[in-house]
Length: 279
Image 1: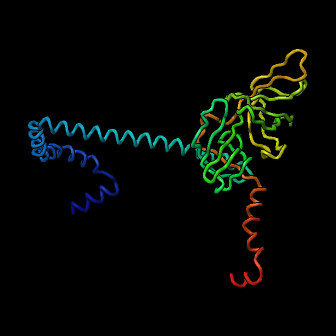
Image 2 (image 1 turned 135 degrees about the vertical axis):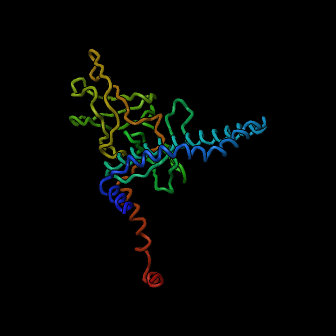
Image 3 (image 1 turned 60 degrees about the horizontal axis):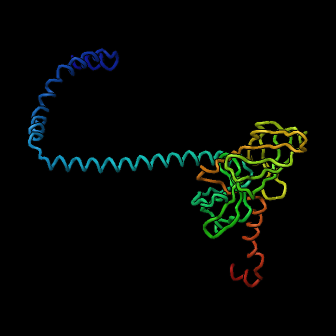
C-alpha cells in the first residue's frame, strides 16, 4: 500500500524529487568506494610505466594530432567550398540561361596575360566565346577549348573588351581591361554624359558575345580634364578575378537550341527502312 502511495505521489504530484536527490547524494561515497580498487590499480601501474612506453604513447598522440589537424584543414576547405557553392547556386537562380559549375585548375604564369584554365571542355558542351562568371559578376570569356579543359580570358586582360551599360540610365559604353585585376577602364564616354561613381555596369548584349544583364563592374572614379571631349573613368570589377576557384559557364538559349536540334537530327535523317529496324 505504501509503495502505491509513493508511486502516485511521485508520478502525479512530483513530490519525491528532493528525496531521490538526497538518496543519490548519500550513495555517492558508495560509488566512489566501488571504483576505488580499479583506480588504485591504475595508479600503481602508472608508477612502473617505462620511458619507452611513454615515448611510444607520445609518438602515437603526435601522429593522431597530425591526422586530426589534416582533417581539420580538409573540413575547413570543404566548408569554404560549400559556402562558395551556395553563393554560386544563389547567383545561378537569377540567371535565365543554363549554367554549369567549373573549377579553376591553372592560372597563366605570364604577368602580361590574364588567363585561367577551368576543368570544363568540349565534352561538356563548352564553346569558344561563352561567358564565365563567379558568384559576384562577369569574369571573362572562353578563348580556347579542349576535350577536358578550357582557357578563359579574364576581363582584366589588356586585349579584352565588354560592351556595357549603366543600370541607372541605360548609358552604353565599352569597358576595357588594362592589365590590372583590380581596375578596368570605361572608354568613349562624353564629358556631358550622366554617369556617377558607384554606378553599376552590366553587359549590354551588343555584339552578341555576352548575354545581356550580367553585372560586370562598378564605377570607381571619374576624371574630367579641361578641353578633352571624353572623361577618364575607372571601374572596379565585381568578380574576384584572383580569388574565385569555382565559376559558372553560361550557355545561351541559342546553344541549347542547337544542342537539342543536334540530338534530334539522327532520328529525322533515318530512312523508312532504318526506322522499321529500330522499331
